[in-house]
Length: 437
Ligand code: NAD
Image 1 (cartoon, protein in one colour):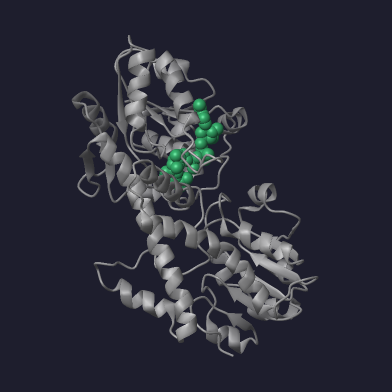
Image 2 (image 1 turned 60 degrees about the vertical axis):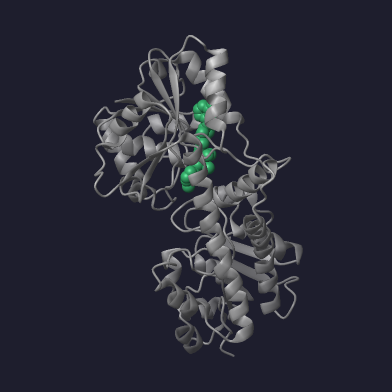
């Protein structure tokens, strides 16, 4: 099939490359000239394990191309996916759909013959209806159907998530577009990957409901972590014991500094706003959003407390900045609020992240960027581990301790082994359990 992907960010690029690998003819479009030029020159502008190779292979096979202009590719396309950003609107927290509508109008102007427009971006319930109205009223001569196909991939594991998703949700109210979507995905092993067809509005809500539920699960275990510290229980063991119950499951039960990233914060907020508009407030999700927002700065205060109540003039090291490992994405990362709190407290903050340094420079304040964990530790009065990159799990603890001014480690992800840290003379503040001494 001839497929066009509008938006070549984390979702568009991975989806486009993986659809090409299924044998489709794919053109990835982006309005960012820099991005397209980089891609055309063989450079991948985002960090996503495995992506570079798939892009290179499929470009070489002639199935994958990049373009700044959608007119020709859309005119020839069977399906056009919209994978542009839908950030929170600054004024009110609703999803900002301006990129989606702008892309949709450009697509409609260029479309010839029957064209399926597929929203892969996360869009509020009713957006598909609005797109249909725009197409009907502004482009009455065009034959366009609108389908919702929300994306569930996780950054850092995006390739395997695309290839072996738990489900592919397709919301379509039209038989012809349902057939097109079946053809798009038929090369995936559909025995393992159920294609779940439903109405368009239902599909749109499945995405928000899923993200809100996962965000709530994370927030639940974070609150349990706080309680564990008071009660003398161990949140990791509580989570393990809970997760053994298959009705609960063991995923998304790792206590930490609060959820961040490009999806959970904005999607929970957008769902809250939608529900309020319909006079059906979602109290659980409203509370989840509020707890999580407060938690990020609270993690900064936790570091301050571990430094005897003040970080003024003290050097504090931060390990890991991205919102999770294996990505360079800094959007809504807890590190931003944590670093801010430390700077507000007068700390001299030194940071390191294996992939997020460039993105971090755009959002962090006056911090010092170091080249590795040991540089961050040099002269530090405390280190806080924010993002659990693998390389931090195998640090040379003796070397780390040697370069620190005082060996305090605040581990927001429970990466470090308590026995080993004690043996090396660290004072460890773990998450969701009492410190040893
Ligand atoms: P992103 O910001 O990385 O990429 C969006 C791209 O769209 C940018 O490169 C931008 O230049 C381009 N763009 C915007 N308007 C355009 C237009 N009119 N024409 C062409 N290109 C245009 O965003 P992302 O993280 O890939 O997310 C895209 C959507 O997918 C969002 O709705 C998001 O909520 C959803 N989603 C994201 C993830 C994730 O993990 N990142 C997972 C599931 C769903």
